[in-house]
Image 1 (cartoon, one colour):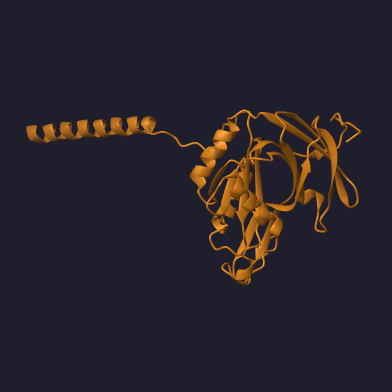
Image 2: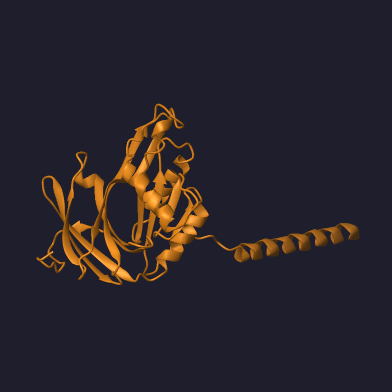
Length: 270
């Protein structure tokens, strides 16, 4: 009888000890938070170089879709450039352009990289990653969002029948920088019938459909025009402006264009 009571007490204390340990573990285990959850006064431009003809690109495209969904309320800009150098492998990318391949080559020179590849991500023109390295990319985004920007760009666009008239106002450390206008299609799907992704339906977001670089006016205020692609649809596309250093490729500001409302003090001489 005594033995039974003793065993019962031992079991009781073991259960209590295990419960306390488990309770403590709950409060000691750190909760992982999304790297882009607490943006500061900075911005992050994520430029992905991808291709429908590249078998390792779909995971990077999927990551861009997740980041885009999380961008609401943050100064986070996702841009997907479809390069054309995979076209020779059996599938011509629906959105591919030699202009985007050229931009990737330019980044290779700016960042002194031994090679370019897909999928490749460049963040704020200064750091590069394999496009599917989610943890590294999220950490870099978080760092940029919490680094105060040294410049600012505001854009307003007026849509005519065949073009955008874009009024811009740049301020801050803008000397030595160009204005890069990016026209983006928000989403699309492609059924791939040949090449490395044969038989797959690929989903894309923030597809760059037009890229235009303009020299900034000395006072940072001016107007530029962008011709519309034939496939343009107002609800499905958007305009983004970047300020980029001509010598280093670093991005110092970014902004989405709003509709023209005469709130920007535009100098009529530009």
